[in-house]
Amino acid sequence: MRCGEKQAHLPRVANHFTGVDVRSKILSILFLLVLGVGGFDARHVVEAQTQPRLIEITAHRFAFEPSEVTLKKGEAVVLVVTSRDVSHGLRFRELNQELKIPAGGKTQLRLTPDKVGDFVGQCSVFCGSGHGGMALTLHVVN
Ligand SMILES: [Cu+2]
Image (cartoon, rainbow, N blue to C red):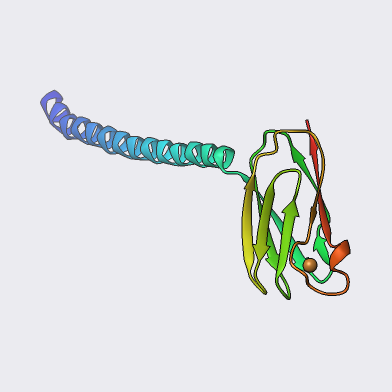
């Protein structure tokens, strides 16, 4: 009887080890998946930190929308200016920056303000009767 019990017990032990092996394989696969997802998240955060902030602006006769934007000194931003109608321009005399926006198109201006203050950009392409009042003000703060 004892001998029979041992023989009956042995396969169970073997099964038990097989079960642990499968479980540890599943665990290590899960662990790798978690690591992979974690690694992806970390890369995503680093990218988000190094990419300049995009600021979408619409230009149309005779305004920029929004007409005021607040920026942080030293923070890199990209102004993405889209024209909804005719060609426009945007010139910041004090910052020595100018961009042209084609009719119905978009233009980007990368900018890292290095001084605090208000900087007014004027439309620099004549677009009609209200052209002179078409402005975008950048408020640069600390
Ligand atoms: Cu204009």
